[in-house]
Length: 396
Image 1 (tube, helix red, strand yellow):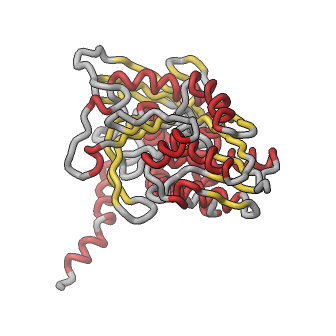
Image 2 (cartoon, helix red, strand yellow):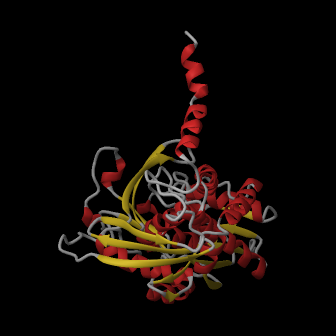
């Protein structure tokens, strides 16, 4: 007897390929959905429908989710200058929520009665997919074959090979998960907290020491990247250009150590040239046009927003409140930032904006000014320190 039609989040890798065949053998009519958030080559996307059909899926859909990823997720991470642990630009977490949302949308379109993903029971992605699927489609069943069966990769490969679907064994020393906002890198060095990840492990490889410096000018309008070197481009195009420009220099590389959703410590390498370059430039522009109190609360609330997204709480109403705050904060974040790339280094060389709060004609730090007199400054300094003077008079 035929079981419920199911839509599967499909990457074409071993886990999701296993899911197609396994679900089909369980009687499900499987529709595969691949959401491109910048991690697939043109050739890979072209092969995806063929692979899906060969495995026995009844239909396949490819969704270009890059613009959606920026408009609904990345623009808020950029507005908040979000770097988890002051290092990692949250590439994977944003992508998974975007992918899950689009998979649910396609499930509604095709009339599916169940949703499926190929995450294991060990990492963060299972939580992100589960929460998104249940929040957006509580009426649909959730099927997770890899997690439920607890199979090893070798067992999955054997299962597929026995049915005429041999999969190439992973021979690379490092696992690489590529996306528009960054690429994560895992290997033996990330399994402990002391080992260094070698340059060769990153997709960009070893950085030549003799690369000539390169200068780029990024333009922003209300916090959104709108131009590169004076040429108007979409945010997705700018991100693509910056990834290509920064990768040879090793810009945006690092290793992040932090807490997983499940409560254990994890460590991962990352290469995110565009994300790091844009966040660096955006933060510098904000320093020029926003007040000190705005900058303080933006850092605090931006980190909170990043935590909600990273830890699978994107659909909490608080996230919408924070998005409203972040959007409001960007009204005057318009201008240009000049960046210089050097081997393994990113420098901010200059910033300008029509909303600049830095006006040398009015006052210059450490120099004469036209807004107050020396006597007024002395009076301010005296009053400013009264609370501390009184506190030190009190004996403990």
